[in-house]
Amino acid sequence: MRKISPINMINNALIDLPAPSNISMWWNFGSLLGLCLMIQIITGLFLSMHYSASIETAFNSVVHIMRDVNYGWLMKIMHANGASFFFICLYIHIGRGLYYYSFKLTMTWIVGTLIFLITMMTAFLGYVLPWGQMSFWGATVITNLLSAVPYLGTDLVQWLWGGFAVDNATMMTAFLGYVLPWGQMSFWGATVITNLLSAVPYLGTDLVQWLWGGFAVDNATLNRFFTFHFIMPFVVLAMVMIHFLFLHQTGSNNPMGLNSNLDKIPFHPYFSYKDIMGYMVMILMFMLLNLTNPLMLNDPDNFIPANPLVTPVHIQPEWYFLFAYAILRSIPNKLGGVIALLMSILILLFLPFINKKKIQSNSFYPLSKILFWNLVTTIILLTWIGARPVEYPYIMIGQILTINYFSIYLINPIFNKIWDNIIY
Image (cartoon, rainbow, N blue to C red; front, side, top):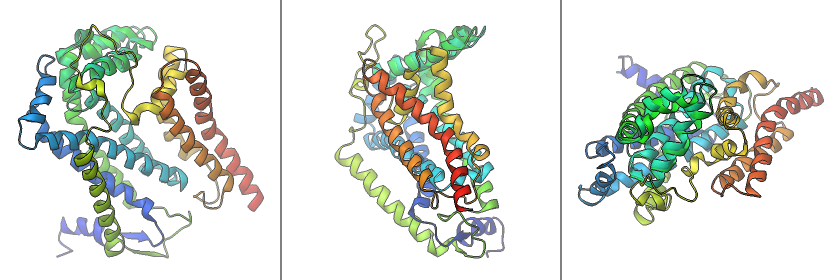
């Protein structure tokens, strides 16, 4: 039976796949991400059956799902909290890759980084869909960033908005994440984030208006966000398959960073049981959160319908965007902030080319270990700063942490070279 395709393909990918014998639990988070993605797609499909992508009815449709649809409350809560679990697993997965130098598997790493970017974009679109107060204003600010693009900025923002403000068209794009409920925080979050595009020279204003589909976050913006939010998870799914393809061509790395071709064992049963154990633990924690404190990670302002006439005192995105948001805020110049925001993620693409060392792991590099935990601490502190008001001393602390964040990536190759010269 195993010789029959596609059973043979499944066998080679999940059963007889050669895996290094010494990989630890930190390698479980790739499979946990697959579980989270399936949860998000399935719950999202059910929610889309009842969601209304219109600024007049979006917020009420979410209320209808929560109160009237059978188990709608569970689907909505699982979808909202599932995004947080997805990003927890994603950040640990990336952290493991940085610590054990998985980025030396160049194509696997590049595809994974692109998946990270698309996932962040998908999550932001979902952030708008509730059409709450923070959804509305978040969409308005962030889409406005496009206005910074020379010449085309204004047109791009209006196209995205579908008019001259964040309105009904915006609603379609974002779906049932932070923006789609069209609550107060959804609205203003979308407004703030999209407004960042206005920093692009010459084209910025046109880009923001093209993105908004008008002159403000409005109905057209919502429609676009819903559409993209619906499509992008399937794009992510396709890229995950490509990620697997490259990974299985080269094989996984291992904690020692050494060639493990002579010491590999079948994936099943040795690691498949580990993955199943990981699934059970994650599902237990996930359902405990959903059934005991389901709104712990939600923004209170998003339980208020979007009001374009009332700007929240403090606009902030979901927790998993806060470190990047803090980097954006730390640069006084709008275009500079947008570039810093993009580079905080895109710098991952350059790691395979700037990090050269003898052993592909931090296991034998104490200086690199110190820098890695410095990076983790910096990201946690940036997340905290992103949730603070834009005032002294938080602005200064954010700027210091931003400099430290980028410096670590630049200093690490130098430390590796020094240590290689010491031990070889």
